[in-house]
Image 1: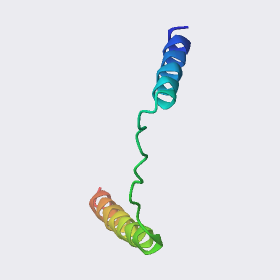
Image 2: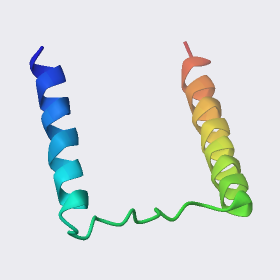
Image 3: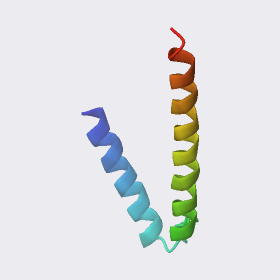
Length: 63
């Protein structure tokens, strides 16, 4: 119930700012990686994973 009341208060306070002519906050876009950046991240993670698995297998094969 408290969540509903808090949500309604937030809506009412936001509406009051708009009706009073006060400037609202702009949404700032967050920069993201492009397609090539995502591909590079996956390649680096894949290589890191392969190296980790090989090291793990090399240490456990002695047992």
